[in-house]
Image (cartoon, rainbow, N blue to C red; front, side, top):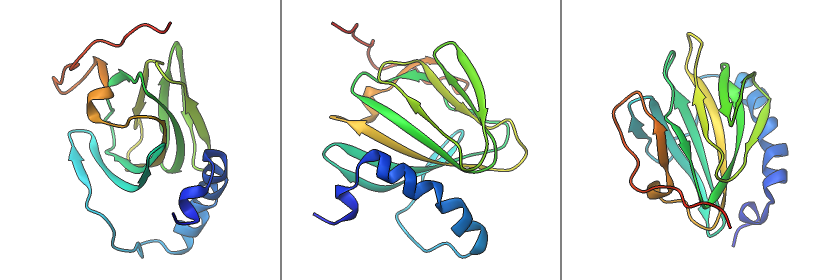
Length: 155
């Protein structure tokens, strides 16, 4: 196991809050890495994964948004690197600026959108015991995708 994999989520958040400054200093000089997975709203790249976490870099095109969704087996932490993120979490809707972050609790209805005119860059840290795409229950989707199964109620 590498030292990076042993970091707690909160240590990751501290590390990632320093990333935008480093990116601004190196604008246009990003290292080659794993391929991006294309989505109708933008793309994501898996940066690291382990048995209890997965770290992704999300790029959301201007004016686009992800589905309103829930997960039963993971919570998420979002850190904005570039752009402005509009976040829906439960009944709250709020904006995050670069270097700001939020926590999305397990089973919360949530959505990420880009109200701006430039691509939104977000680091997403997932923490839980399962990270498959079939743990996504879509409640509303601009692109016609549907839920694969209903979310079970908590005991």
